[in-house]
Length: 138
Image (cartoon, rainbow, N blue to C red; front, side, top):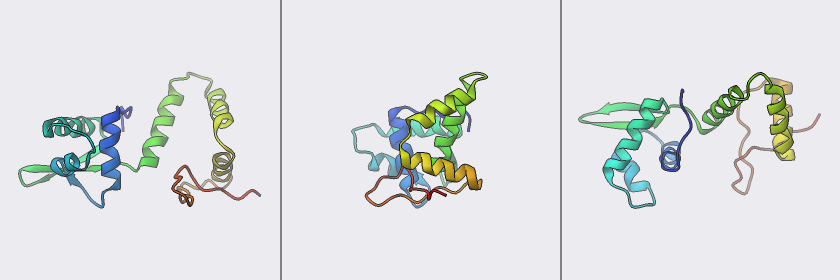
């Protein structure tokens, strides 16, 4: 993924693609959005997302179907890496500032991931908060 900064409408479209069990047509995405938009606007947004490499475009007859090219978590990681690239040589200071701002559960999940070198995403916690599960302290 290259340019992964997304606008509000692009994020809304991506949310529909991430929630879908498979690739969606422009019409399906359009019908799922909770706002009044022209069909062509949704088609344009999906085309832009495809050019950014954020969605995959698959031919389906005369139309296209669209699917997210990466998971929401992978995309968030890419955004964080892009932001770290913008701070220059002092990435450590930026990382420390980030860790200072996360909650105790996220900090514990980061410590566990660093300790084990695991790359899988923690399961969402009960109550719908999908920021990450509490990692055990050791």
